Length: 242
Ligand code: F6R
Image 1 (spheres, rainbow, N blue to C red):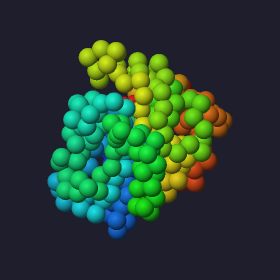
Image 2: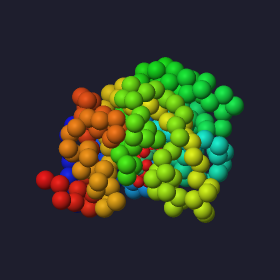
Image 3: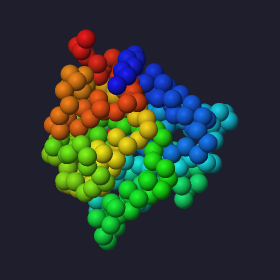
């Protein structure tokens, strides 16, 4: 696992966007795995800027998002479908049919999970998967305790995740309690992984990750087993770690 320490959110976003842009330009039909949340917003802004300057082109890019809440519609402002349109897809020349966000509204959610896995395989697997990290070490919505070989599945969200995500909703009661997420095994199948971490509230997660112990209690620790994973961490998230 390669660690890159940066000054702040802005530098993290810029470095991450540079890596994504480089891969998009180097790979003929890139397959990029995307994340939502506060952490990647700045990186998406820079990618849009690079697109506007003609430095990158999304026409041949396929995307797969990590996760989505169960039970909220695509047009709900809190859905990850809506987030992706707002923060990236509506601003670049990506072909909508090449974007994939799992559906948390499918009648048959188990089938949706199987089909999501099949679609990733059919696309030739993910070239570069972006990840954030939850305060409790989750990746995607793989909460502590999720097996490392898990595939796309439905998961009950932990109380701490519901609380962390309540900031986006009018009240905590509106936060969905379930989500559909790529499994840890699905994520580890990506050819390259790029995790970005910013802010003081991620310090405990960073400390657990840097300890190097691989444990189901810290889902992000599975990255230690990946041959090509980079983690960009800003000073606020780094804290007292050596
Ligand atoms: C989002 C996702 C989550 C977030 C994590 C951190 O698609 O998969 O694992 O990356 O919850 O969220 P933020 O960036 O909002 O702190």
